[in-house]
Amino acid sequence: MIILGIDPGLRMTGFGVVEKSGDKIRYLGSGVIKTVSAKVDARDSLPERIQIILEGLFEVIDQYKPKQVAIEKVFVNVNPQSTLLLGQARGAAISAAVIKKLPVYEYTALQVKKSVVGSGHAKKEQVQEMVKRFLKLPELPQADSADALACAMCHAHAYNQLQSMDALSYRMKKGRLV
Image (cartoon, rainbow, N blue to C red):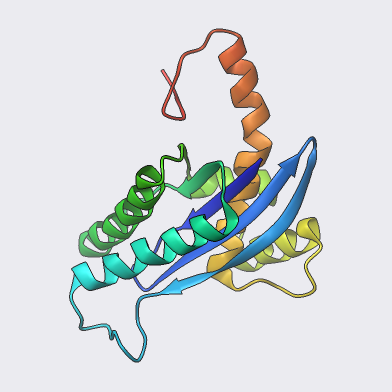
């Protein structure tokens, strides 16, 4: 099963793709979708940046053909405006998956860090190092890519548990327990 992990952001949206086969998780690819470039600067309109995220994720989905998507949930920031903007980038990422008819699973940053590092309060550098080690990468992945890969890895670890809960007649609706 191929899993696309997404770390949403309005300036940079990280993506990471892994393949889960039995108990093994293998790295397939990762990167960032930048919405600030020579063509689009920070003053450009929000719709243009959302379009870049959508189109970038469509390309990633078409290239890697994932079967599931794991995305990090938004936390409430001190700055409400930043939280709203992050939520819009996250909405674009979820929309890209839904348009491509992929199931979306959501995880908090605490869940992702605990799954990959063993501590929910791990620093970004620790996440990068553990992703590098676990996936046997030659160098540290960029921070946003590492977060996305960690999200995909978290889902790969959690998926077996989700399946067993489903088998025990817990109801699953769109990737959530109900």
